[in-house]
Length: 262
Image (cartoon, rainbow, N blue to C red):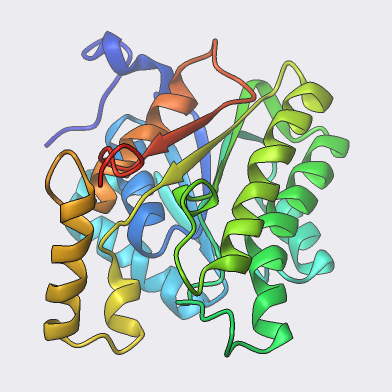
């Protein structure tokens, strides 16, 4: 494996030497976006609420490819705290692409969750990127040609039981994507809307292998591609939105055809 350069890989030259920030980059889709960005020749900052996780992720990426040395770093960020967000951007400085995949990291249950857990959906997945973008914009931290890519979820178009607040949060993200694209132009703002994706979140919430197998079978039956999503697959949608300079104000559904399935 080698790191791309504008000379040896012109088809992926768009990210060579670019500064990419991935909030939520320590696991799942965010981790795969960070790794793919590095493979495309970018310098990457990964972030999450835990500095321990950030440090472990940087080490993990370096073990994946020692050539990432000097191109990967990490900073912790409390996405629910305005001052933490501002301090984060003061440290990051200039940026070419912001990718926000952080979403609060939980499996919701509308009828049982308390209000604080419901609020977390908006605080992390909606207000976090909005506050970040506004602060970075006012500070002049977006380089020419910069982009912002947020994350919603196909649950907004096909809600599942228990995911009512998540659907509302995803809808808010997709709505403000269009507004921000107008407000911040020519900075591009887009969103990826993943379907069901098998990530570490499933294990961290105590889903046994047996339960996961039943869930995967059910999810696969709803897709047209006949497999549950993998984070590295969905990461490609974020790479596209960073690279395609003629795309803004849009939401891409990356869901294996589940919205058309049974």
